[in-house]
Length: 320
Image (cartoon, rainbow, N blue to C red; front, top):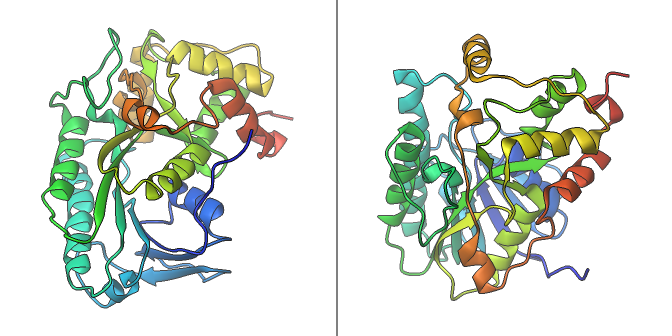
């Protein structure tokens, strides 16, 4: 299959770019472009990738690095993989809204601002849905904690008016890739024989391969007529039961003990997370992007898993 053109010879700034998705973007774009990574914990510069310190809240010199940038990507936000204490909830909100606000302030100071600003968001903005899929046109948005975070994050971005910078919200589903994220925790379950369904297994699992996240960003850059919110999610979400079965099959495992909801609640307390991350039914379709003409390299789950496992050592998904 012929690959669509990717970004080349551009200046790309990635705020909060040292996490899993940021590393995926670096791997995808870092050889052909000049990348600037804004982070609280800079790494050593390598190749065409430069790291710069920022606090995600205040201006302080880093904003000059945005001059003449072709693309700004903001991934900044405290992980939701934690207990939802009042302190953690506030940090989850603040880390997203503060970074978005200060990037808007920074852009206003520039003589040559970025042509496109893509702000990460989450496909979990839609309600728990086992009855029908959600998209940008018909999706229903309710008011549990994760949805409140998504709404405030997007509102903060939408309230920023920039005359020379196009703005896009990317509602990213659970992202699968060899660089990290959810893959290793799931593979650990599988290789210990615990990779069965979670809860009743009927909750829908919307996902996207990291390669398609990168390809979608590159494609949107090349479409100057497009702005607003886009679901970044593969077109074929599956029930949790199917997700786990497909992962076991791709890894060569045949037994997977299920984890009922009560067991997940106990385990979540022990490891310091919330069962919502496993039990919320996220049934999301990428209607806007596909109607606009984007095609996914990994629209189906099994080829996505097979590609990722090919890039991982055998010990990542087998005991021996």
